[in-house]
Image 1 (cartoon, one colour):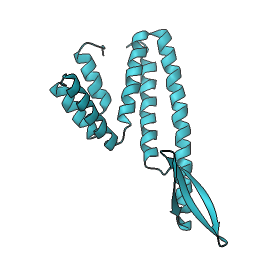
Image 2 (image 1 turned 120 degrees about the vertical axis):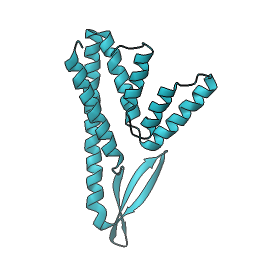
Image 3 (image 1 turned 135 degrees about the vertical axis):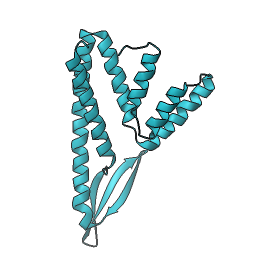
Image 4 (image 1 turned 180 degrees about the vertical axis):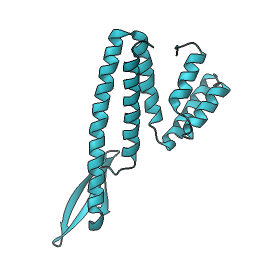
Length: 174
């Protein structure tokens, strides 16, 4: 493939981005607040969800671990942002060099969003997709249904099934 180095670097960055997101998913989010009650310090993990701030008491012996997780999450968020900037630059270069390469990169990035989803969100996405195709009256092929089931179970990447379908219907070339 022409511009294979750009393609390979892009794939590598996408894999790193997915790894960052999967790691961050298992870390706490929010910030630590301290309240002084009767001269004693109490620590709370606070986070905003749906425009509401929730608080969770943090025992003093757990405070270092919680702070460490929050710091790690912050570092990951910075790494994701930097990775996104690198992906944007590669897409811009591909758009100038080769429109077909640019389209492939955009497809890969969209697929990576699907692959970064947690299991429950994958299940909900599949249910939504099934509802939409039922409304449209356009059933998915057995191959597509199988690929989506494997993706939902975490046994196959969304990208592999999606690219297979695009090639099958001659929408992209490998």
